[in-house]
Amino acid sequence: MDNSSLPDGPALAYLRAMVTALGAHAGSTCGFTWPERYLTRPEVAICIGLGGTHVIFWNPFAGGWFCDRIDEDDCMLDEAHALIEGAIVPRPADVVSAVMLQCERQLDALPLIAAETSVPDGTRLTPAQQRAVLGGALAEDVARRLAVYAAEEATLTHA
Image 1 (spheres, rainbow, N blue to C red):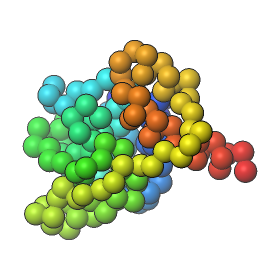
Image 2 (cartoon, one colour):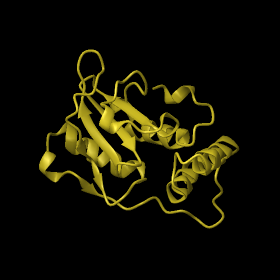
Image 3 (tube, rainbow, N blue to C red):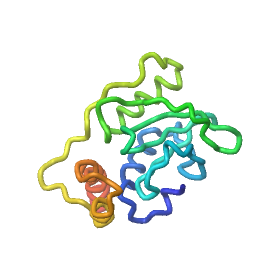
Image 4 (tube, one colour):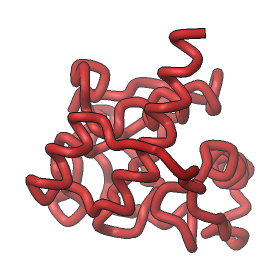
């Protein structure tokens, strides 16, 4: 599932913000095989490899961010655990904190409690987010939180 090939995917700006926040820890964002119970709508899926042994993935219908181990064929092993609690679209820094706990094998500290991304007044959905809401791929409140990242990205691009 190659999110980078979705030029206007509803979660693409959030994916890019997450990869930026993860820095050197971020690996591939495509090519992973998901266990059936974690499958989500492809247009909203986010998946990021970590060091060739783990992958973090975002499934808004299952509660947010999870981590699973992967095998040599990049197939998830269906041993996922939640990274974040309390937020479907947490700020990238909170996800990075949870990933660091994962990397340090402090699994008893997970899931990390995080707040939802705040949505400023006037935040507008992108056309892709509008389509995702209309098509049932995203709840409107989740799309609005994702729109924050698209707006931040647009501001940086036009600055």
